[in-house]
Image 1 (cartoon, rainbow, N blue to C red):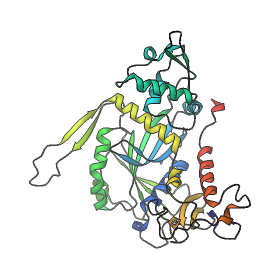
Image 2: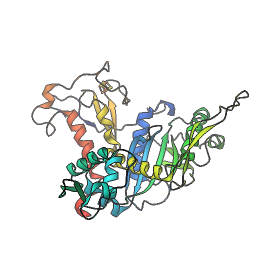
Image 3: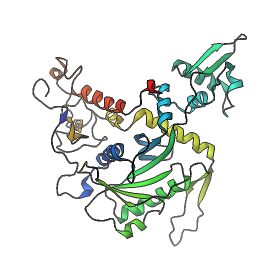
Image 4: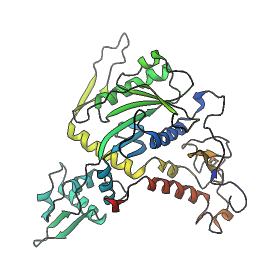
Length: 375
Ligand code: SF4
Protein backbone atom coordinates (compact mmCIF):
# COMPACT_ATOMS: atom_id res chain seq x y z
CA UNK A 1 0.00 0.00 0.00
CA UNK A 2 1.06 3.56 -0.46
CA UNK A 3 1.89 5.60 2.63
CA UNK A 4 -1.60 6.99 3.17
CA UNK A 5 -3.21 3.64 2.51
CA UNK A 6 -4.59 4.66 -0.86
CA UNK A 7 -4.27 2.88 -4.17
CA UNK A 8 -1.65 0.18 -4.46
CA UNK A 9 0.19 -0.12 -7.74
CA UNK A 10 -0.84 -3.70 -8.27
CA UNK A 11 -4.28 -4.95 -7.30
CA UNK A 12 -3.99 -8.60 -6.38
CA UNK A 13 -7.58 -9.23 -7.19
CA UNK A 14 -9.26 -11.67 -9.48
CA UNK A 15 -9.48 -9.57 -12.57
CA UNK A 16 -11.09 -10.11 -15.87
CA UNK A 17 -11.03 -7.42 -18.52
CA UNK A 18 -14.46 -8.72 -19.44
CA UNK A 19 -17.02 -8.50 -16.63
CA UNK A 20 -18.49 -11.94 -15.99
CA UNK A 21 -21.53 -12.51 -18.14
CA UNK A 22 -20.95 -9.53 -20.36
CA UNK A 23 -20.70 -9.95 -24.10
CA UNK A 24 -17.27 -10.37 -25.63
CA UNK A 25 -17.73 -7.19 -27.61
CA UNK A 26 -17.30 -5.21 -24.36
CA UNK A 27 -13.62 -6.15 -24.21
CA UNK A 28 -11.79 -3.00 -25.27
CA UNK A 29 -9.45 -3.64 -28.19
CA UNK A 30 -6.58 -2.14 -26.22
CA UNK A 31 -7.08 -4.52 -23.29
CA UNK A 32 -7.46 -7.46 -25.64
CA UNK A 33 -4.28 -6.44 -27.43
CA UNK A 34 -2.31 -6.47 -24.18
CA UNK A 35 -3.82 -9.83 -23.26
CA UNK A 36 -2.76 -11.30 -26.59
CA UNK A 37 0.76 -9.92 -26.10
CA UNK A 38 1.00 -11.50 -22.65
CA UNK A 39 -0.40 -14.76 -23.92
CA UNK A 40 2.06 -14.84 -26.83
CA UNK A 41 4.98 -14.10 -24.52
CA UNK A 42 4.09 -17.14 -22.44
CA UNK A 43 2.69 -19.61 -24.87
CA UNK A 44 3.75 -18.90 -28.44
CA UNK A 45 3.55 -20.87 -30.73
CA UNK A 46 -0.15 -21.75 -30.49
CA UNK A 47 0.52 -25.31 -31.68
CA UNK A 48 3.61 -27.26 -30.67
CA UNK A 49 6.53 -26.50 -28.38
CA UNK A 50 8.57 -23.32 -28.42
CA UNK A 51 12.06 -24.15 -29.67
CA UNK A 52 13.51 -20.63 -29.82
CA UNK A 53 13.27 -17.38 -27.86
CA UNK A 54 10.72 -14.81 -28.98
CA UNK A 55 10.28 -11.07 -28.77
CA UNK A 56 6.73 -9.71 -28.56
CA UNK A 57 5.82 -6.14 -29.44
CA UNK A 58 2.76 -4.16 -30.43
CA UNK A 59 1.79 -1.48 -32.92
CA UNK A 60 4.70 -1.93 -35.31
CA UNK A 61 4.93 -2.21 -39.05
CA UNK A 62 5.50 0.05 -42.03
CA UNK A 63 4.47 3.59 -42.86
CA UNK A 64 1.31 2.23 -44.46
CA UNK A 65 0.48 -0.58 -42.07
CA UNK A 66 0.79 -1.21 -38.35
CA UNK A 67 0.13 -4.59 -36.86
CA UNK A 68 -1.43 -4.90 -33.42
CA UNK A 69 0.91 -7.62 -32.20
CA UNK A 70 4.25 -8.78 -33.56
CA UNK A 71 6.01 -11.99 -32.57
CA UNK A 72 9.65 -12.21 -33.62
CA UNK A 73 10.97 -15.76 -33.44
CA UNK A 74 14.71 -15.54 -32.84
CA UNK A 75 17.84 -17.58 -33.34
CA UNK A 76 19.07 -18.18 -29.74
CA UNK A 77 22.77 -17.49 -30.41
CA UNK A 78 21.91 -14.62 -32.74
CA UNK A 79 19.68 -13.01 -30.12
CA UNK A 80 22.45 -13.20 -27.52
CA UNK A 81 24.85 -11.66 -30.01
CA UNK A 82 22.33 -8.91 -30.78
CA UNK A 83 22.36 -7.96 -27.10
CA UNK A 84 25.92 -6.61 -27.50
CA UNK A 85 24.52 -3.79 -29.63
CA UNK A 86 22.54 -2.38 -26.72
CA UNK A 87 18.87 -2.20 -25.86
CA UNK A 88 17.96 0.68 -28.16
CA UNK A 89 16.81 -0.05 -31.71
CA UNK A 90 19.21 0.29 -34.62
CA UNK A 91 17.37 2.26 -37.29
CA UNK A 92 17.87 1.72 -41.02
CA UNK A 93 20.87 4.10 -41.18
CA UNK A 94 22.61 2.41 -38.27
CA UNK A 95 21.81 -1.03 -39.65
CA UNK A 96 23.46 -0.01 -42.91
CA UNK A 97 26.63 0.87 -41.00
CA UNK A 98 26.85 -2.05 -38.57
CA UNK A 99 25.76 -4.52 -41.23
CA UNK A 100 28.66 -3.59 -43.52
CA UNK A 101 31.34 -2.36 -41.13
CA UNK A 102 34.60 -4.12 -42.08
CA UNK A 103 36.81 -6.17 -39.78
CA UNK A 104 39.83 -3.97 -40.60
CA UNK A 105 40.11 -0.18 -40.74
CA UNK A 106 38.77 1.32 -43.96
CA UNK A 107 37.48 4.65 -45.21
CA UNK A 108 33.73 4.54 -44.73
CA UNK A 109 33.00 5.32 -48.39
CA UNK A 110 35.16 2.38 -49.44
CA UNK A 111 33.76 0.02 -46.83
CA UNK A 112 30.03 0.68 -47.09
CA UNK A 113 27.86 0.18 -50.17
CA UNK A 114 26.36 3.35 -51.57
CA UNK A 115 23.05 3.66 -49.75
CA UNK A 116 21.21 5.54 -52.48
CA UNK A 117 21.29 8.83 -50.56
CA UNK A 118 24.08 11.37 -49.97
CA UNK A 119 27.23 10.22 -48.20
CA UNK A 120 26.94 13.00 -45.63
CA UNK A 121 24.01 11.15 -44.08
CA UNK A 122 26.09 7.99 -43.95
CA UNK A 123 28.85 9.94 -42.24
CA UNK A 124 26.36 11.08 -39.61
CA UNK A 125 25.24 7.50 -39.11
CA UNK A 126 28.88 6.40 -38.73
CA UNK A 127 29.36 8.98 -35.98
CA UNK A 128 26.07 7.94 -34.35
CA UNK A 129 27.11 4.29 -34.41
CA UNK A 130 30.46 5.17 -32.85
CA UNK A 131 28.69 7.23 -30.16
CA UNK A 132 26.54 4.19 -29.41
CA UNK A 133 29.71 2.12 -29.06
CA UNK A 134 28.74 -0.42 -31.73
CA UNK A 135 31.61 0.35 -34.14
CA UNK A 136 35.04 1.99 -33.85
CA UNK A 137 36.10 5.07 -35.81
CA UNK A 138 39.33 7.03 -36.26
CA UNK A 139 40.76 9.75 -38.49
CA UNK A 140 42.94 8.23 -41.19
CA UNK A 141 46.23 9.76 -42.27
CA UNK A 142 44.53 11.97 -44.86
CA UNK A 143 41.84 13.07 -42.40
CA UNK A 144 39.29 10.63 -43.74
CA UNK A 145 36.93 8.91 -41.31
CA UNK A 146 37.72 5.24 -41.04
CA UNK A 147 35.69 2.59 -39.29
CA UNK A 148 35.86 -1.03 -38.30
CA UNK A 149 33.39 -3.28 -36.61
CA UNK A 150 33.48 -4.41 -33.01
CA UNK A 151 31.24 -7.38 -33.66
CA UNK A 152 29.50 -8.73 -36.71
CA UNK A 153 25.81 -7.88 -36.73
CA UNK A 154 24.12 -11.26 -36.15
CA UNK A 155 21.45 -12.97 -38.17
CA UNK A 156 19.06 -13.13 -35.22
CA UNK A 157 15.57 -12.99 -36.79
CA UNK A 158 14.14 -16.33 -37.85
CA UNK A 159 10.50 -15.48 -38.45
CA UNK A 160 8.13 -12.57 -37.98
CA UNK A 161 4.50 -13.22 -37.19
CA UNK A 162 1.88 -10.48 -37.55
CA UNK A 163 -1.32 -10.66 -35.49
CA UNK A 164 -4.40 -8.53 -36.05
CA UNK A 165 -6.50 -8.37 -32.90
CA UNK A 166 -10.26 -8.37 -33.24
CA UNK A 167 -11.95 -9.34 -29.99
CA UNK A 168 -15.43 -9.26 -31.54
CA UNK A 169 -14.85 -11.08 -34.81
CA UNK A 170 -18.32 -11.39 -36.24
CA UNK A 171 -19.17 -11.74 -39.92
CA UNK A 172 -19.25 -8.00 -40.49
CA UNK A 173 -15.85 -7.50 -38.80
CA UNK A 174 -14.40 -10.38 -40.83
CA UNK A 175 -15.59 -8.79 -44.08
CA UNK A 176 -14.11 -5.45 -43.04
CA UNK A 177 -10.81 -7.10 -42.22
CA UNK A 178 -10.58 -9.02 -45.44
CA UNK A 179 -9.02 -6.30 -47.67
CA UNK A 180 -6.39 -5.53 -45.05
CA UNK A 181 -5.44 -9.15 -44.55
CA UNK A 182 -5.32 -9.63 -48.33
CA UNK A 183 -2.83 -6.75 -48.48
CA UNK A 184 -0.73 -8.36 -45.75
CA UNK A 185 -0.69 -11.68 -47.56
CA UNK A 186 0.11 -10.11 -50.95
CA UNK A 187 3.01 -8.12 -49.51
CA UNK A 188 4.33 -11.11 -47.59
CA UNK A 189 6.41 -9.06 -45.18
CA UNK A 190 5.58 -11.41 -42.31
CA UNK A 191 6.06 -15.17 -42.34
CA UNK A 192 2.58 -15.68 -40.96
CA UNK A 193 -0.53 -13.55 -40.54
CA UNK A 194 -3.05 -14.29 -37.80
CA UNK A 195 -6.30 -12.83 -36.56
CA UNK A 196 -6.76 -13.15 -32.81
CA UNK A 197 -10.28 -13.02 -31.46
CA UNK A 198 -11.79 -13.39 -28.01
CA UNK A 199 -13.10 -16.82 -27.11
CA UNK A 200 -16.86 -16.92 -26.69
CA UNK A 201 -17.29 -20.52 -25.66
CA UNK A 202 -18.72 -21.17 -29.12
CA UNK A 203 -16.72 -22.52 -32.01
CA UNK A 204 -15.81 -20.07 -34.75
CA UNK A 205 -18.41 -20.44 -37.45
CA UNK A 206 -17.11 -21.96 -40.72
CA UNK A 207 -18.94 -19.21 -42.61
CA UNK A 208 -16.99 -16.62 -40.65
CA UNK A 209 -13.70 -18.38 -41.45
CA UNK A 210 -14.65 -18.18 -45.12
CA UNK A 211 -14.89 -14.42 -44.84
CA UNK A 212 -11.16 -13.99 -44.17
CA UNK A 213 -8.38 -14.96 -46.59
CA UNK A 214 -7.51 -18.61 -46.31
CA UNK A 215 -3.82 -17.80 -45.78
CA UNK A 216 -4.49 -16.11 -42.42
CA UNK A 217 -4.72 -18.13 -39.22
CA UNK A 218 -7.48 -17.57 -36.67
CA UNK A 219 -6.70 -17.79 -32.98
CA UNK A 220 -9.28 -17.60 -30.21
CA UNK A 221 -7.93 -16.28 -26.92
CA UNK A 222 -9.77 -16.57 -23.62
CA UNK A 223 -9.31 -13.16 -22.06
CA UNK A 224 -10.58 -14.35 -18.69
CA UNK A 225 -8.09 -17.18 -18.34
CA UNK A 226 -4.35 -17.45 -18.02
CA UNK A 227 -3.86 -21.19 -18.15
CA UNK A 228 -1.95 -23.16 -20.73
CA UNK A 229 -5.08 -23.98 -22.70
CA UNK A 230 -6.40 -20.43 -22.93
CA UNK A 231 -6.09 -20.16 -26.72
CA UNK A 232 -7.22 -22.36 -29.58
CA UNK A 233 -6.39 -22.42 -33.23
CA UNK A 234 -9.61 -22.18 -35.25
CA UNK A 235 -7.71 -22.06 -38.54
CA UNK A 236 -4.04 -22.64 -39.27
CA UNK A 237 -2.27 -20.05 -41.43
CA UNK A 238 -0.24 -20.71 -44.53
CA UNK A 239 3.44 -19.89 -44.27
CA UNK A 240 4.35 -16.97 -46.54
CA UNK A 241 7.74 -16.45 -48.20
CA UNK A 242 9.21 -13.08 -47.23
CA UNK A 243 12.35 -13.78 -49.29
CA UNK A 244 10.28 -13.45 -52.48
CA UNK A 245 9.20 -10.08 -53.94
CA UNK A 246 5.78 -9.01 -52.69
CA UNK A 247 2.87 -7.08 -54.14
CA UNK A 248 1.76 -3.84 -52.56
CA UNK A 249 -1.94 -3.36 -53.27
CA UNK A 250 -2.48 0.39 -53.44
CA UNK A 251 -6.06 0.54 -54.62
CA UNK A 252 -8.66 -1.96 -55.62
CA UNK A 253 -12.17 -1.80 -57.03
CA UNK A 254 -14.87 -2.07 -54.42
CA UNK A 255 -16.52 -4.75 -56.49
CA UNK A 256 -19.81 -2.91 -56.84
CA UNK A 257 -21.95 -3.39 -59.94
CA UNK A 258 -20.87 -0.03 -61.39
CA UNK A 259 -17.23 -0.16 -60.38
CA UNK A 260 -15.14 -0.71 -63.52
CA UNK A 261 -11.92 0.71 -62.07
CA UNK A 262 -8.70 -1.25 -62.19
CA UNK A 263 -6.64 -2.30 -59.21
CA UNK A 264 -3.40 -0.40 -58.64
CA UNK A 265 -0.40 -2.14 -57.19
CA UNK A 266 3.37 -2.03 -57.11
CA UNK A 267 6.07 -4.56 -56.36
CA UNK A 268 8.06 -4.66 -53.16
CA UNK A 269 11.44 -6.16 -53.90
CA UNK A 270 13.04 -8.74 -51.68
CA UNK A 271 15.80 -6.39 -50.46
CA UNK A 272 13.26 -3.80 -49.31
CA UNK A 273 11.38 -6.51 -47.47
CA UNK A 274 14.53 -7.87 -45.81
CA UNK A 275 15.54 -4.40 -44.63
CA UNK A 276 12.04 -3.57 -43.43
CA UNK A 277 11.78 -6.83 -41.51
CA UNK A 278 15.02 -6.09 -39.73
CA UNK A 279 13.88 -2.57 -38.84
CA UNK A 280 10.64 -3.94 -37.44
CA UNK A 281 12.51 -6.61 -35.47
CA UNK A 282 14.89 -3.98 -34.08
CA UNK A 283 12.04 -1.81 -32.90
CA UNK A 284 10.31 -4.84 -31.39
CA UNK A 285 13.51 -5.73 -29.55
CA UNK A 286 13.83 -2.22 -28.14
CA UNK A 287 10.22 -1.54 -27.23
CA UNK A 288 8.65 -4.86 -26.39
CA UNK A 289 4.93 -4.56 -25.71
CA UNK A 290 5.00 -3.00 -22.25
CA UNK A 291 5.96 0.43 -23.58
CA UNK A 292 2.22 1.21 -23.69
CA UNK A 293 2.67 2.72 -20.24
CA UNK A 294 4.73 5.54 -21.76
CA UNK A 295 1.61 6.93 -23.42
CA UNK A 296 -0.58 6.57 -20.30
CA UNK A 297 -0.66 8.24 -16.88
CA UNK A 298 0.55 5.76 -14.28
CA UNK A 299 1.17 8.81 -12.07
CA UNK A 300 -2.61 9.29 -11.78
CA UNK A 301 -3.88 8.18 -8.37
CA UNK A 302 -6.50 5.99 -10.05
CA UNK A 303 -4.05 4.05 -12.22
CA UNK A 304 -3.64 0.42 -11.20
CA UNK A 305 -2.09 -2.68 -12.58
CA UNK A 306 -4.61 -5.43 -12.06
CA UNK A 307 -3.10 -8.83 -11.49
CA UNK A 308 -4.61 -12.24 -11.88
CA UNK A 309 -2.21 -15.17 -11.95
CA UNK A 310 0.44 -13.00 -13.46
CA UNK A 311 -1.71 -11.19 -16.03
CA UNK A 312 -0.84 -7.56 -15.49
CA UNK A 313 -3.23 -5.17 -17.18
CA UNK A 314 -3.84 -1.48 -16.59
CA UNK A 315 -7.05 -0.67 -14.77
CA UNK A 316 -8.66 2.61 -13.78
CA UNK A 317 -9.95 2.78 -10.21
CA UNK A 318 -12.14 5.79 -11.01
CA UNK A 319 -13.81 4.18 -14.00
CA UNK A 320 -13.81 0.74 -12.32
CA UNK A 321 -12.75 -0.93 -15.53
CA UNK A 322 -9.76 -1.31 -17.80
CA UNK A 323 -9.12 1.99 -19.48
CA UNK A 324 -7.87 2.49 -23.02
CA UNK A 325 -4.55 4.15 -23.77
CA UNK A 326 -6.32 6.97 -25.60
CA UNK A 327 -8.50 7.95 -22.61
CA UNK A 328 -5.69 7.71 -20.02
CA UNK A 329 -4.03 11.10 -20.35
CA UNK A 330 -3.71 14.36 -18.47
CA UNK A 331 -6.93 15.68 -20.01
CA UNK A 332 -8.99 12.77 -18.68
CA UNK A 333 -11.86 14.22 -16.56
CA UNK A 334 -11.04 11.78 -13.75
CA UNK A 335 -7.31 12.43 -13.79
CA UNK A 336 -5.84 13.23 -10.38
CA UNK A 337 -2.11 13.45 -9.86
CA UNK A 338 -0.84 11.04 -7.26
CA UNK A 339 -0.55 12.91 -3.92
CA UNK A 340 2.93 14.18 -3.05
CA UNK A 341 2.83 12.07 0.14
CA UNK A 342 2.94 8.94 -2.04
CA UNK A 343 6.32 10.01 -3.32
CA UNK A 344 7.87 10.32 0.11
CA UNK A 345 9.54 7.77 2.32
CA UNK A 346 11.19 6.22 -0.69
CA UNK A 347 8.01 4.42 -1.73
CA UNK A 348 8.16 1.96 -3.37
CA UNK A 349 11.89 2.47 -3.96
CA UNK A 350 12.03 5.95 -5.28
CA UNK A 351 9.26 8.06 -6.75
CA UNK A 352 5.57 7.33 -6.33
CA UNK A 353 3.32 4.56 -7.64
CA UNK A 354 3.57 5.94 -11.18
CA UNK A 355 7.34 5.54 -11.14
CA UNK A 356 6.85 2.13 -9.54
CA UNK A 357 4.60 0.97 -12.40
CA UNK A 358 7.11 2.15 -14.97
CA UNK A 359 10.04 0.47 -13.28
CA UNK A 360 8.08 -2.76 -12.72
CA UNK A 361 7.21 -3.01 -16.42
CA UNK A 362 10.75 -2.04 -17.42
CA UNK A 363 12.16 -4.79 -15.18
CA UNK A 364 9.81 -7.32 -16.71
CA UNK A 365 10.93 -6.23 -20.18
CA UNK A 366 14.59 -6.52 -19.23
CA UNK A 367 14.10 -10.02 -17.87
CA UNK A 368 13.04 -11.06 -21.37
CA UNK A 369 16.26 -9.84 -22.91
CA UNK A 370 19.34 -12.08 -23.09
CA UNK A 371 22.49 -11.18 -21.23
CA UNK A 372 25.18 -9.93 -23.65
CA UNK A 373 27.80 -11.50 -21.39
CA UNK A 374 26.52 -14.92 -22.44
CA UNK A 375 27.24 -14.32 -26.10
S1 SF4 B 1 -5.93 9.36 -16.26
FE1 SF4 B 1 -8.14 8.87 -16.29
S2 SF4 B 1 -8.21 6.82 -17.22
FE2 SF4 B 1 -6.09 7.16 -16.58
S3 SF4 B 1 -6.02 6.23 -14.53
FE3 SF4 B 1 -6.44 8.43 -14.29
S4 SF4 B 1 -8.65 8.53 -14.14
FE4 SF4 B 1 -8.18 6.55 -15.00
